[in-house]
Amino acid sequence: MSPIHTSPVPGASTHAGASTTDGPVRHMATVRSFTPRRGRITLAQREALDRLWERWGFDVAARTIDLGDVFGNERPVVLEIGFGMGETTAAMAAADPDTNVLAIDVHTPGQGSLLYDAELRGLTNIRVVNGDAVELLRDMLPPACLAGIRVFFSDPWPKTRHHKRRLIQPEFAALAASRLVPGGTLHCATDWAHYAEWMLEVLAAEPALVNTTDGYLPRPAWRPITRFEQQGLDKGHEVADLIFRRR
Image (cartoon, rainbow, N blue to C red):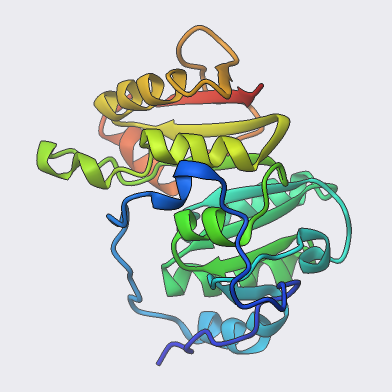
């Protein structure tokens, strides 16, 4: 069986009611943009979780954390929301060792895979979080603490009745912007044309963010092609990258 994540949160405030929430973002809707998944876990993934979770992983909880304590240094931190099996996350962390990566997902095999890969590559700039990214941003991270946020190929929820489940919503854009340092970036990518249009409209309407280009960007050379992206490309989908900067 997969381990149950119960390790204490590193760098957490000792005040049980600690919160960094400001204004209306505190009342974001509780509609989930994801479905928790465990899936089949390999022996290597399970052993990586057992061995490394206490050191490099933690669960979302109602505590404010100090990212300097979490990583043991004061390097810039990028939050990656939804990393799948973690190949792209590990590759980008290896290519940029002076940036810390806080990677959150609810897929247990993916968490184990990323921890295994990080140990194998000798990467010390990755921390893995289990839980809801909105709750992490809202309840655990203080304002203006992130150099960047990455949302690569989040679920497009294509059916109209499910659009409320999409991660990129006006409330999320405001919350994400509040956690970015001035000049920090929110980088999204999708292979669903309608979701790309939705993202562009939502992010462009957030007063604290400004688009770094006119519309969409081609995939930057420093962003590896993800597994989900390749599946979309194989189906003939076009990929859109959006990078917005915090004013």
